[in-house]
Image 1 (cartoon, helix red, strand yellow):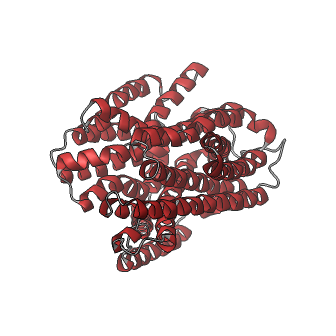
Image 2 (cartoon, rainbow, N blue to C red):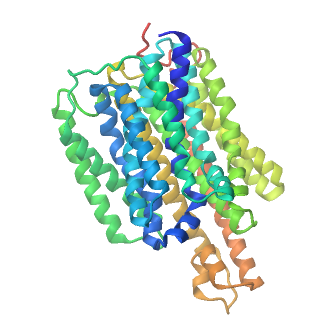
Image 3 (spheres, rainbow, N blue to C red):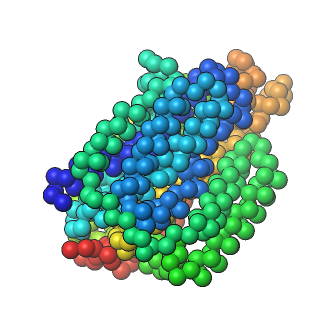
Length: 496
């Protein structure tokens, strides 16, 4: 394939990835409007958001490995078609129930398409330097899609009806379909690869149950029976899955690949980076909307500073990886992000511009780490296992983000409740969360001041927790990658 066609193919698969990640966050600002328009209940509103990541996380591993058998071009095209049709139906959904069903269908399309985006880069870019840079672009597109989702959603609602957040996908899908048919290499299925349906179902049940458990932990208050049941189902499903993989000659997930420290460090970095991004976005948008009075669009623009910082370092990391090795960019990137979150905390106390600078610095560190983490994952898996490796990475991304929302969201609420010092006349509900306080106290300055102070304390505790997680991640990946310094190869499977 000529260089021009390779880079055009990258642009095409990147557009698909952008849509997938955009749809993870685009409803954050649109949800209140579409909930009102459709008359959705609280439970329905929750599932309008949750159905997409839950179903996608459950299907990704099986679809990624199936792509190794069916061919990744075919999987990408099929995913685009499903995603486009689901977007069209979602835009004109007459009821909340139909919208939830179409969000499930969107997740199916995303799960089919997403592993194929990275796998096609793995098999198309055969030279190490080109591949590094291509994967760096892929990683930066992922961060940008997540970061701009709330901004795009807010901007569309300024001028159009809520369905426009879904209709936006359709023309991009059509362009990507045509481009793929014109420039993609021939589909190369591998019928010798065995795809085990039972293993795929076990993985799906385990991942969905695990995601539900994580999400329930984040509810206020959490339901212990739901958590216990979800954990039990996940434990049983994953136990059966692991046992079955060890018996199969061609497993859905080859656990031996995790013995490669570069691969494992890449998986860990992907999860930690998304944990940090998801956590910072969650608590910062809440703090600046509820306490500082920012609009949803303004708070979205604030956390977009993460993407501003990540884009140049992601591209630079891919360009210099062949010289630096994985260690400085992964462990060093997580270290820079640790300093960035610390700077954000200092800026919270001292000056708003310093807070923004801290977010840009955090993004810079995470951009470098994430871009080369993807290289470490796909470059340390054989070409005929590109779909499996891609799926493992994307499951790591999903769990990192979901864990941040659930665990850090719970920590935010816990610290608020534990530290709030309300006046004696304040209603009990005001001690549960800031949102509850705002709903019941009206313009009582004394209660509001106490609630705001407690929320600011909770915000700082959560940001400190993110700092600690990143610092531990930097130390851990530094140890895992101690033999991957300057001059070392980042990939064990590079085709020439």
